[in-house]
Length: 504
Ligand code: SF4
Image 1 (cartoon, rainbow, N blue to C red):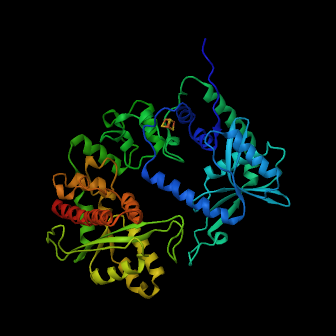
Image 2: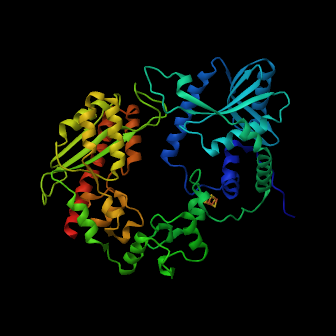
Image 3: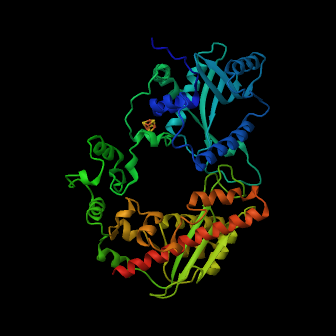
């Protein structure tokens, strides 16, 4: 006889996971080890959420917090109900267990019309899954007769807020009323909870096909378990440049998982066809006209330029806004004439802020000092650099004219690649500098990110923000790593441009 499994409590996070995928919910529920655990970036977002959560309590000061007691759901529920019946009017992390579903409500505030419920998010806009999250809470609270509900709101960060000496909660947050949405979702939520209860009682994992849901709203922590092993290989249909995910999945479902199995190329775009051609011929597909058009726009001296930035959910410096990028580092290589071959330390300038200070004015002054007054400023995906410069100009109005004049001289090195001038099969459908550089300069160890401790921008940003927790010696090491990483970004651009010149 098959033994029926004991139902586990459904928490808010497992409900959200179950909405994304019943299989992921089942795997998590059965403690199947994750194949793609949360990365550092996700952990950083979680800790930003905690920080924002703490500040949000100041919206309703003097409230009482319900402690988290591990798996003692009923005890937490009872403590919360006692507080409510004893007349407490502001609660933080109020906890409820109803019909096998456990929720913790960020903020509850009693008004003359009933309780207002607040779900706090460290984001600058209200997303659909935030509304789902809040709606579940509303639905569960509606089942408790002692609680008269009034309004349900999602609280997010107001991106117009600019810090001035301290965080003022009323200005820092904005609230969106989602009461009506939650009421409309009632039947849907009840159905979802019942589906999850059925799923959690099953002995076998549900059969769910992979799909776009695997990466939205969050990247699933079981991707390697479900997705094909060859999905990152040079001939995988999943690497087809900018092909809509549903089309990739259609191909895959029809047994067409590699380029070799593609019979009809007619529906693919220009770059995708070049990608297939590069794979077939094992040679780069080159359009010299497109490359020449790009090269003809270049004016010497070329300033190869790159920023590293950080952002904070909770602003640290005066004049800082939530989640707005703050440049803390740049690297600049200057090539004075065509054919000048630079060594990595040659004609090089750099800036790296001090982690305890607002870096914006100092970095702006350093750029004005070091960037040549004429010639092309070359960046990779230059819209990012140009946006950062606009923000620096806003922050330093006295330097705005000089800073903004830089933006008129930018030329984006990604253009000849994105435009179809050069496709190498090892790009694997991506024109990011991290894909293009090793494909174009595979032999040169000096041009490899692999040997660096910091290999990508997100890691640079986290390293800089974490300097405050390190010893002086560790700080020195990490700063060196940051300098090496950013310097390679601009030296890589010099090498890529040299390669384009050599091609024509
Ligand atoms: S990878 Fe996709 S199908 Fe597999 S568990 Fe995750 S979301 Fe579900």
